[in-house]
Amino acid sequence: MSQEFAIHVIPVNQPPIFRIVQENLRVGEGVETTIVFAENVGAGADEEYGQAMTWIFSHYCPTLFVREPQLSVLSQQGSLVGKMNFAVPAFQMGECNLNVTLADDGISSANGDRNVSDTVSLVLSVLFRNRGPQFEHLDELRIYTSNQLKVVTEFARVISTGSFDEINQNVSFRMENFTFNGRIVPGLFNSFVLDVNGTLMFQERTNAIGDYVVTLKAEDDGGAMRGGVNATFSSFVLRLVFNDGLRPVIASPGSLEVLEADVAIEKVFKNFFQVANIGNVTRPTSLMITDVSDPDLFLTNPLVDADLSLSFELKPYVFGQSSVTVMFVVGDQTCANGSTPNTCIAALPHVVYVNVLPWNRPPSFHVLDFVGSVEDGGEDVVVGFVSQIVAGPVLKQGRASVSKYSYLQVMRTFLRSYRR
Image (cartoon, rainbow, N blue to C red; front, side, top):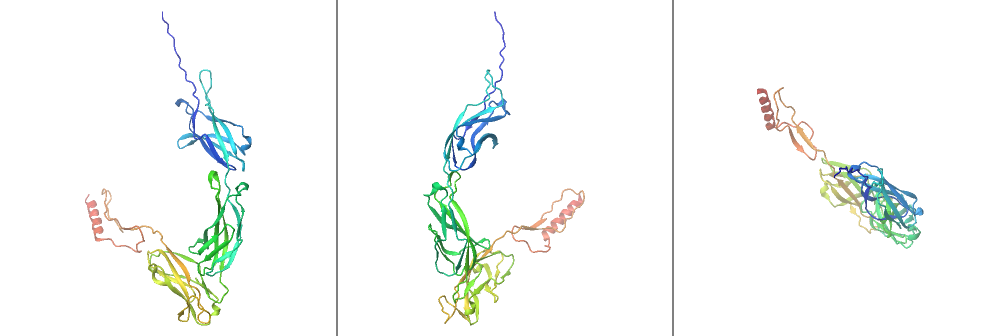
């Protein structure tokens, strides 16, 4: 005797799945951060795609968080990941065990349905985070320009190496950059040192005159791991002024920037130079350019006019940098460094850097003035319709003539179309 019976295979809800990226999480104290702690997050079986998933989270470290961790399931580069956002207090280190479980909105039953994953434990380590040193300095320093080494004691001092537990760190200073009229200029200092005691020692280039903004950097050896900061920046104004001796002093901006020229053109910069203590000289005086490091930039060498303007004529399509050295001239004699008022009162040589900068021109081309055709004549092919294609400088303005070859091609195309 035999009997038949039916077996009904019913689907069961599979638990959600995920893979922990790292079991040990390390962050710096006093930060807010977001960490991807899980990847390959899924609802279980393929047919359960679309189920909503949430994290179940617990810990026993209430004092280690300024704000409780917020866990979420988010899409990242085509797959689902688990992210944790939290904030920890400053100056408090320690470890905490975090228990993480993933749940979906499917059912859970005695038939084998499960809507929660196994619980995974993570270890969160809150570690020391370096703070940048704090320092103060003079906001403004006024110095008579000369070729002598300047020493300014107690120019700067360290207020703090960062935090109370960083007192053994070493702090060093250096110059980050300096600007004149908002632009970084080359060659202002022959030497510049700010030592750990805050003593500033520098020697500027000969006869550098004007107000310069100098940016300083203080750096400790605590590192920048886990969001730490090991450097801070601050600026001061360095005013380099004329000396108060008998010797005349030449001054000007340390550098000059111009764009390369398309055609030969004269550039004139009015009242570019200044001369102090000129009243100590009774004989006729003038400024003369004695050296140009790269004369190939110019059609004619730079000149200093009677009104102390600087003028020069650039070569077309040439760029680069050239130093221009200016000397003080009394009568017909170029005074040498070290002269005295009894023989020839001289200014020290003065150097200006001329920077000729390249710039990109738009492409240019020429098209035929006319194209002959007839209606309903079929496809026309005009060879040489566009010519004189140039990627760089613009062609001279005006109507370009049609070449004989291009003109014949147009007429042949016109006649061919007409016969159709």
